[in-house]
Image (cartoon, rainbow, N blue to C red; front, side, top):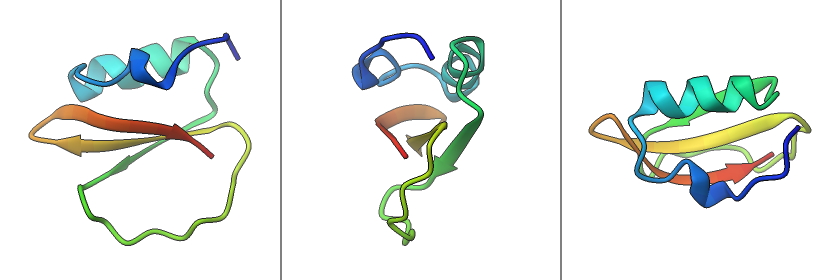
Amino acid sequence: MAVEQESDYVGLPVEEARALAVERGWELVRLLEPDALITMEYREGRLNFTVREGVVERCWTG
């Protein structure tokens, strides 16, 4: 995966952010609603996006 900042994705439309993540080699991109309940297991190769109204609000790995 390319060296990058998680903030590279914040503010992008979700489809643009997802395409960029795949292009950069992320195996799995998980889309979550704000305040979604999720498990906290770390998964190598996964990028998580919190999406509000079609825009990435937060991004983190695992």
